[in-house]
Length: 136
Ligand code: NI
Image 1: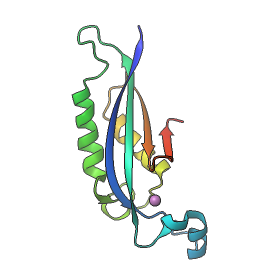
Image 2 (image 1 turned 90 degrees about the vertical axis):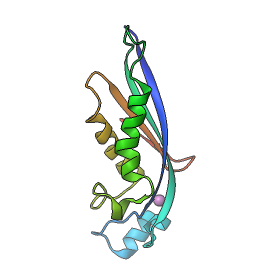
Image 3 (image 1 turned 120 degrees about the vertical axis):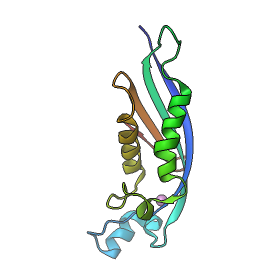
Image 4 (image 1 turned 60 degrees about the vertical axis):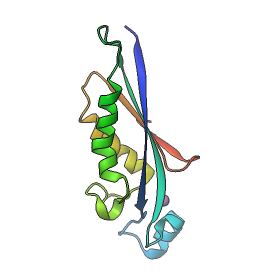
């Protein structure tokens, strides 16, 4: 059997502040630069969700795109779009909302809602040029 990757793109806007409360103000500024701005700043995040699996001989699908689209909308976009990640979300109340941590959180949210037969890979663009992937 041949495995095929099905990829759905999504987009959300969120505000965040990168900050480690254990560090001094000076250290935070040094490590996080502008992203440590106390009054937050926004990003236009682009998300690519890749689901890999066997093609079902009956439907010809790996996964119904509608199901994947709804999963992303209901559990990722509803939660993070037009939100301040630090203030408005449970996930990042005590977790620094770096692209790395955001991709891990999104992967865990979707992994728990996808059947085990699928492999899941996620790519998150924080800017056009800066993006992260999980699993690495
Ligand atoms: Ni930032």
